[in-house]
Length: 232
Image (cartoon, rainbow, N blue to C red; front, side, top):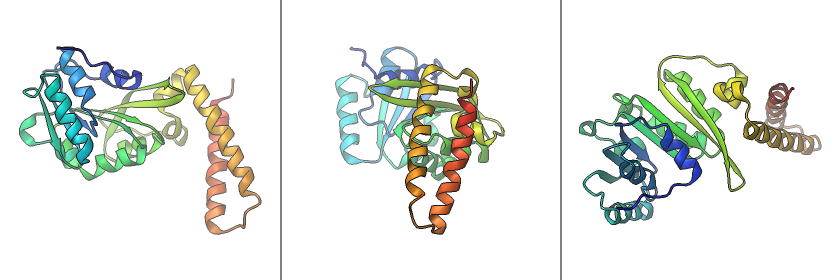
């Protein structure tokens, strides 16, 4: 058996999976993450869920090639509906999608989370949507990570059941990330601040419709918040 080599971002996701967990990887693509978790002995059983036929077929082939068909179940299903009651899934991973899409998947299939203890989400953009979902649905953020790979910056959120409240700044940049303020974190928000200022400047010459006014107000609020985050 060979050990699947993961990208740095998926390896970071894997690091937050508890030993012995039963994992459902939603939007699993080639099922690399479940195969890695099995090969490294971290978990004994996993579900790989895919809603698109092509990636689903790739996942089935990859699991078979890795010799893991008896331990990784690949299902073609929409989001969390890949999880069945007798799977005893206690950990869900969702990586490589936009934050709003991840939040929508969690909301649409939240009945499937009844026995899930941990959610590990890796949004490509707009992690704020997942934090907002967590607050509304009694999940709390126990860990966060941020890393840079191939010029792109990724955030990872680890949720467990429990109520929590976060202010606007924490929802935007992450309550845990805000404490550590790593070099990658600062780079991300400097980039965002530059882009927001560029967009705001371009809107100044646009016709003042209600939508433009709302957008300018939102950008101004974000710029003010992140300006405070970046203060020495």
